[in-house]
Structure formats: C-alpha cells, structure tokens
Image 1 (cartoon, rainbow, N blue to C red):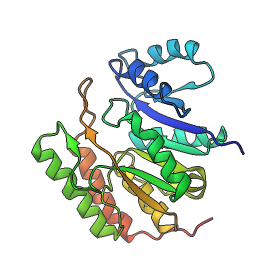
Image 2 (spheres, helix red, strand yellow):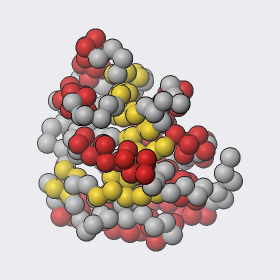
Image 3 (cartoon, rainbow, N blue to C red):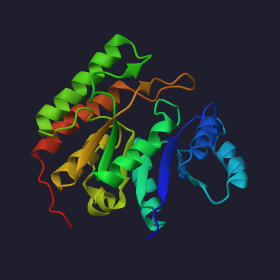
Length: 241
C-alpha cells in the first residue's frame, strides 16, 4: 500500500482560521491531505472549505455533520473515513494554530521510525505552553499527572490533541469502547493504544493558545474526563484483535 498522510481537523465556527490552516498545511514540503469535519458551523466555515476544495480538489475533503456532536465523535468519524480511503498515517490537529502545522512532519516521522502513536507533547520536556493563564497551565499539567497516575500510563501529556496514529492502531481499537466524547476521548485513545501493546512516543512541541476564534473548553469537559478516567481504570481492556 502506498503511504498516504491525512490530517483530520474538526471545526465549529472557525471562519477566522479555516483558510489559513488549510493553506499552511498544503505549503509543507511533505504532502498531507486534509479532512475537515465541520459540525454545522453557523459562521460559514463549511462554505470556506467548499470554496477551497475547488482549488485543491484531490487533497481537501469535507465531512459535514448536523450540529455539535462532540470532539470525540468528530475524530472517530474522521478515522473511519481515513481508514476507508487507505491512509497510512492519520493525524489529529486543531484548526486554531495552537498546534503548529510545521510539526506535522515530525509526528509522522516518529511513527515511521519508532512509534505506532506519536503525541505532540506539551509536557515531555518541562512545560511548553504560550499565552495560557498560569491557572490553566497548572490545571492542565495536574490533569495529565492525575491521568498518568490513575491509569499507570507512561505519557506526560495525556490530554494532548495533536496526535499521529498509524492505521494499524485505529484498526485495532473498537470505537464502541470509547465512552468519553469530549477531551476525555483523547485520554481513552492513548490508554487503549498503550494497553493493546502499541508503541507510544512523545514529540516535544510548543503549544500556543489560539489568537483568533473562541475556545471550546468548558468545565463540563473536564468533569467528564475526571470521572471517565476513574471508570476507565476499572474497565476491562478487550484483547487485541
């Protein structure tokens, strides 16, 4: 199978960033295709992507969903689409430039060389976060420490959302196992990959908080992740396919 790279970008009201992120990814020397999963953005994000698809007909793709259905389901739908279209490496990335597209080749290269899952990590080399209030940095760092301790998983950035998966990982995880649909989804995916014996590596990145658009973070998302981690620790891990 010829190697192909896909970047999955979930969007909701990202008109300020949509065109810029697409053009930046396509400017990279290493070729990446993009799948935008838009949850019915009322600000016209999908219209922007449809216009760009005329310019990039073979590389830019759009999945439109009816309303906000959750970050986790957006990625799972994107994974299913990417697997069906025979992509080798499938990478999650935010639309708001908090994840630097220049790091995409580094994540893929890590998977080529030594890993099955490659995490763009904010905490593997200290703390590498820009523009966050100190309270949010502390909360995020301790959240990852809590997850790492409860799940006994050797990952410093357990809640990271900038991740490259080799297709064999996604083929081995039954998405029906995933109960958390918000940011807890990211924890579940790493945990199942690790427990199934896949090699998980962290690639240090610098995370820069969004400068345009509105953050989707909420206290409910953190609450789901907290209780979900405890349930995840007590759950039985299905055997590898």
